[in-house]
Image (cartoon, rainbow, N blue to C red; front, side):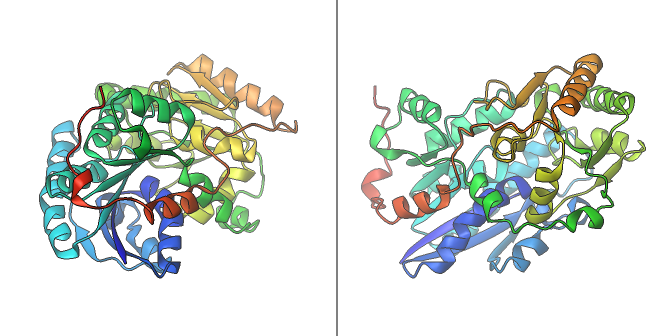
Length: 372
C-alpha cells in the first residue's frame, strides 16, 4: 500500500488534484491523506472545503493559513510560514510514502519543502513551466526540492532536465486539469442557474500579480472600462487571495457587472464551454480553453512566456487593446475553429497513477545531486 499525501489551498489546485484523487480512491494498492487549507476554509472565499467533502473525499487535516485581515505581501508570506510549520505535524501523523505536490501555489511549496527536509519522497506536478512573476520562482523552487516530476509538455521536460534534474525521473504526462474538464457532465441548465439565458457572454478571471501589487487597482479598472465600452455580458469570478486581491474585489463589487465568489468545477466548466471566451490572467485560459475551441484574452504578465495554444490573444493592461480583442472574439464566435491543446488530451491522472505505482520510494532517492 502506497500512502500519498496531498494538500490543497484553493480551487486552482483542487481542480487538478481531483481526477488523481478519484483514481487513488479506486485503487486497492493506494491510499491518501488530504490536508485542506487557505481559501478552502474561508467563508468569504466560498468555503470550498464543502465541495471537496461533497465530492466524497475525506479531509484528514485542516490548516488555518490566512489569519490576518490585512492584504499585503507580508501577510501572504506569514500565511505561507504557518503552513510550513503546521504541515510538519500532519506529515508526522500521516506517515506517507510519497508527497504529491503541484503547480506554483504556496501551500504546495510548503509541503514540498517540509517533505524534502523530512526525508519523504516528493513528486511535483507541472514543473518546468515559465510564467514570470512570483509563481515562476515558486514553481522552480518546488522542482529543486522534488524527487520526481510530472511535466505537462515536452518543453517542460526539456527545461527540467536543463535545470539539472535526473532525466529518468522526469515524465511527460500532460495537465490533469484536462482530465477534470473532460469528466464534467454536461449541464445546459447551468445558464438558468446563473441567469445567463443569452449565451453571448464572457467569463472574466483577473488575479492580482504579486510583483505588480501597487497596480492591482488600475489593472482591474482598465479591464472593467474596456468591458463597459464593449457593452458585453460578463460573469466575473472573484480572484484568488494573493496579495492585492482586496483591491480587485472592491472594484468588481462596485461595478455593475455580475460576479460570483467561486464556482464548483462542474459549473465552471459548463459555463466556460458555453461562453464566447475567457478574459483575464488565469492559467485556465492557457491550459483549458483550447479544448473547448474558444478564445482567451490573456491580459498582462501573469502567464508570461507560458507555452500557448493558438487560441490565446495576448494584450497588455491597455483599454484599447482589450476592447479590440473583445471585438475580435465577437467576430469569431460563430466560426467553427479547432485548436490543438499542447497540455494533453485528458489521460494525465491515469499516467500519474501508473507511474507512482512503479516509483522507487526508498531512502536512496532522497539525496539529490545536480546532474551537471
